[in-house]
Image (cartoon, rainbow, N blue to C red; front, top):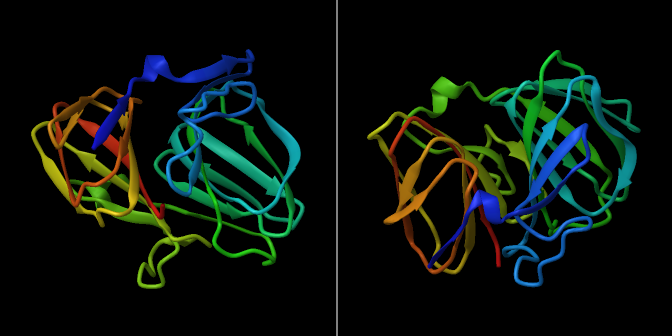
Length: 233
């Protein structure tokens, strides 16, 4: 089962400095049929104007993954962490028992991010933050794991949840395959480009909510950049 969620059907709000689209209920957008997908709770498609951003605010008990699509995001938090994550790269914040953080676009142009929240399996752990480069060329024609709660994914940023966040880039006509446990939930968004996944066509920034599938065959109808979350029910 693949449920296409067209980009123009997403909720959201334009705050001037922030133009946000929400794949799931978030803030003032509420859709009872889109409260999450398995352990995946939030997938926001955010465009942040230059020299603006999210001022310091707290979180607890959430795995927050930021995938930078364009520009860069500059992070600082109450642990003393500071870092800049550029397009194609990823940062993970495990909010744990509580953390206050800020995310700013200090660039000269817009920054575009996917902000992904996944419910944690572990509670009572101290908060943490990390960022890592994932060169686009290393995921050409295949999915690579960017963040993971599985110990065998040693090259990925760690998560405290039974989930993986994956990325791939495909040239037009290329195909990538991902084997999926049919009991799990997957959510796929092409950051760029048009694709076909198991016979369902997606445009850039559409979402695909996937269940009861054991293999995802993704073919690029044009050059594409993909982000996939594989999560527990």
